Image (cartoon, rainbow, N blue to C red; front, side, top):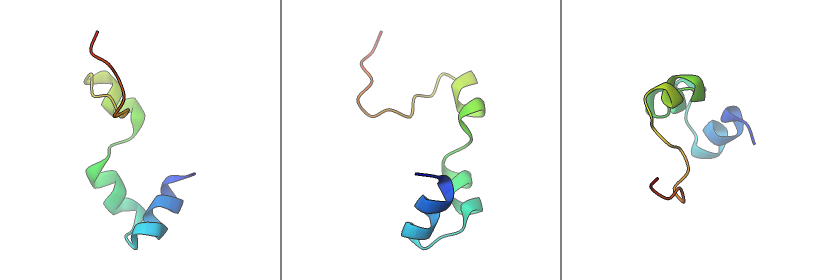
Length: 41
């Protein structure tokens, strides 16, 4: 599944998806975890 697939399913643009969910390389440097099932360390 790609970002474009998610955007199409949500009936929004790819840019809108990136506004709410930054690219992984950006989010990983801030310590943000995309996985809802991640357990605390």
